[in-house]
Length: 371
Image: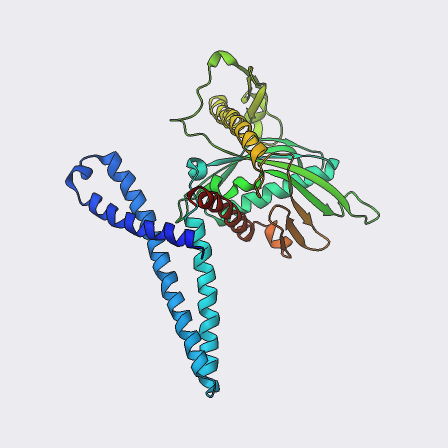
């Protein structure tokens, strides 16, 4: 572990001691907002400190096992035992080091928020639309594995059962590190490319198609961008597709246009026009918020191009090669030969690798600023 990280962890231990003292003070308990904030910080610092203590114990175990191995040249059984302990200690140290790096990543306030995932078919015609449906299923099943809830907000289907465009909303609890839906899925934004034999291909040739994905945090209503109602044009129309007699016979679908920017959001999945309007307004606000975020990110990217990229739709981030059963994330040179399970929602390896890579970037920036 880098000296900078150890210094950061040592400061966490001192901060935990300060928090213990603060939380025992009577004036803090009388201020519930401050008390809740300090309690959350204490829980996070306690978790980091516990992991760090476990890491230092395993480092001590490793040193002891290495000393044992050096002294056991004439005792094969003792040497074998030492080798086994060395392997186990090194594996634990690597795991704990990775976990601590994730814990020390500076938090984005949006990481705890629910997320909208927009998937749009790109080059490839019907095959691209079918790939969009595969991506929708992948994210939906990942949500199920994570114990999250998902719902389709709007959709435009293709003739063969795919999607020209679909918007999915996912919400759920945060993990032990305080990372929620957006924090886990934010690095899915960009261009996704598929290589496979389409169902419409009669000669068995492999085709390449693409979709774009955008992951947007659902804005916190307390701090969301305030939109002037005079800047909105609201249209209602009859929903298309499945949904029963009611949804197809009333003007329940809603489309909202933000006139200053031309940004549009729509929702047609609910039975209630009022409910669809509320959902469409949330998506619209998220898109306006993301536009502002992207413009700021573009200015930052002009000075420094991060490994993970800007999250712009034009960034080609990943290839799904079905003939080889291979997934490649081009940003971090990650290659997995488990494509079948990934498209069924087993995204943990990809999500974690991207979080670790981004964490390394942010920690390096902190090190440079503090170095």
